[in-house]
Length: 318
Ligand SMILES: Nc1ncnc2c1ncn2[C@@H]1O[C@H](COP(=O)(O)OP(=O)(O)OP(=O)(O)O)[C@@H](O)[C@H]1O
Ligand SMILES: [Mg+2]
Image (cartoon, rainbow, N blue to C red):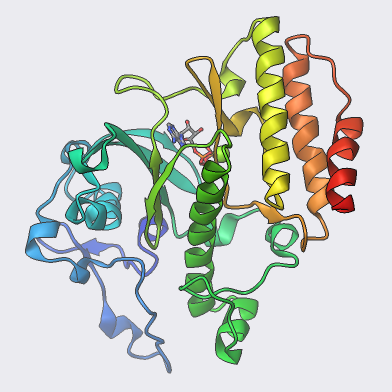
């Protein structure tokens, strides 16, 4: 169990619960503030749910204390997918990180798959995304509908990182991750099939089985034959991304899953647009170097600078 503070799960949470274990929001404490801007709510809050939805307690949450932050957060974040017959249950936590938790969910039979991975972002991602500026350079400012922001108020809010701006930012990162994964999946890249998203969760094909989630390449030892084969697949995937004008930006053995002899690339929120981001080539080179360094452990010889040039120059030529 984590020791995360309540505000990492509930950005406006004051730290006390009511008799049903729900966070009590002390509106009177804020009444002294001059302006309290009401945010457009894409991220669900407790009051958005009907009694039916709040009654849903997935198996994993049932093992947690009703007053535990993670339990509340999980139910709030995933109830809409339960209501829409996408997931049926949350079986267990796969990974808990600083920016997101990943859960293994039992899919609703209507989806045609058995298991679904749900990646839930903590609101804290807004404060911890590293080198935000490098990834955002050249990026269009987009609103909740994914369209370019024209309004002065929204642009200002984003630039000044006001609460409204942070909300738009969070929605943007998640929508962006989903859209990229969908584009890459349709282009034949080795990425988990995306299934859905909302204000703070992305759902996708689960890699692994009910007992075990796929390990990352960083936890796997490869034979030299397999290493050569998977190295080529990884480079093909980097090329598919570039064909789509995308550079992963955080590619390494930690963001590549290994299962049944194949790879799946994950973790797309920081992907950059190769056409508009001035850091794209440097990020591409860093991605390629990290991949080459990993496969070198198993005897794959490669030159990351040469590979970067062989991909980037034809791309720029186009
Ligand atoms: N589709 C999936 N199927 C199975 N496991 C997954 C899936 N997606 C993510 N995971 C698991 O969750 C972990 C974290 O996922 P991801 O890399 O997308 O999030 P993150 O916020 O970058 O976390 P971290 O900082 O730990 O890398 C992965 O290392 C993997 O163990
Ligand atoms: Mg990751």
